[in-house]
Length: 269
Image 1 (cartoon, rainbow, N blue to C red):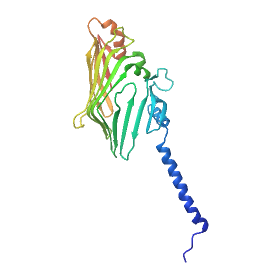
Image 2: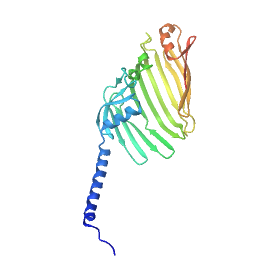
Image 3: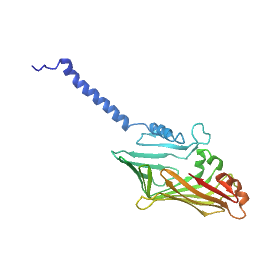
């Protein structure tokens, strides 16, 4: 014979569902209204305090903060951009959208789409142009705090798409950085020149991304090329001074590479 549920069990069931619903609601509210400082703390941990979001406002999903570059814990070289960095994150099951805009440096927001699969991750950036003060880099510590670079960094992307599969980076499109009217406290020449760094991918994204360094103008001549092998960049290049400027650029050439006669050799990886 079937036993009827006890009065206690019957009355506990609605309370149990109510408690479960309240907990789920609290978790959902915490996720939706997660404060921006959570994102700030996560970024500090991931970058070992080299990139910091100070005075955060808003939520993880839509907010703003001042952005600071630092040499890490205990660094005295931290540099903060004027104005604030604004962000908007739209999460999804497998596709997330991100929008960033810096008051100081962007006329329009930069937009990215992130897609995650079982074995691949993909980041696609809309075409973008922004301009950043080179002095901001000195916040990262050595060697930037020694160089004390001055000038403007112009970043441009075109049809840029990055994909990681089986530990290998694949790329389509172009990422270009122009360092314009650059100067340094290590040289009396102001400016020393303007330079271009291009990272090129293949139309199909199957080839290894290539990096090219070239001089646009100026007495300090820089050139080189490299490529990514796995997730590591292998680069080789050289720096030299135009005739009559060797003395003014000697200290800088000693710092940025290994001297070989009148040249300075640049190697990475």
